[in-house]
Image (cartoon, rainbow, N blue to C red; front, side, top):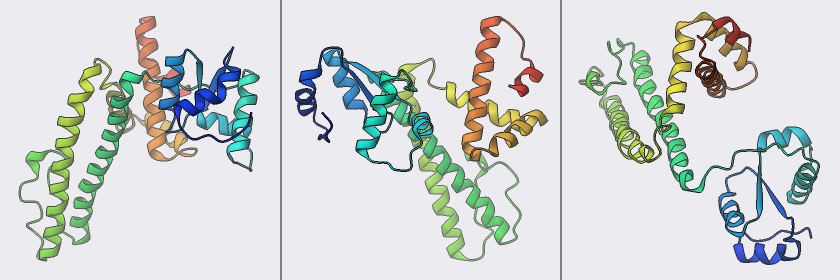
Length: 249
């Protein structure tokens, strides 16, 4: 059997009925795998989630369509070469997706704050003396611009920033606390990576090396991941942080 099917549970179960014995379902990790993973769990079918990036690196074909992709997925699975991704628990997926949206909102908020700073430079006005990421330091922002349109632009930025902060800190984090204690782990490691780069020359060197291969945001995420691994081994082995060993990893 080799055909396209609609994303319908009953059609899928009917199609695989002749092959149910010892069946393994493999899916590339794109956005639409949730329903099939849950269906396989309910039906007692082994489900494997393939890591999309590593799968693409392995087969690396120029031609790409559903028929080719499904065949190569089957070949990787049959040969034991399927690079696996983690099948996130169903009851936590919505919170994980919410936290990912939070990262998007944080970046949008940062872009708005940066726009306010750049507008001051654009009109050759002194930048705000304090960090405007804190709400208490935003009083009077925009009043130094003579043009009413510029003041309106700054006011619009501030209104959006205020709204993003409500969404980020109230609605999102309240829901994330359902799955404590790991709700803030990625955030903490991301903050640690930023501070490591800002305060340590070795950190800046590592980031520069990573940026030769990846975009800056991806490079910072990789650095945060490395710090997370370092923290794990420090706790597991009861050893102090070894900067020289870390920078060589």
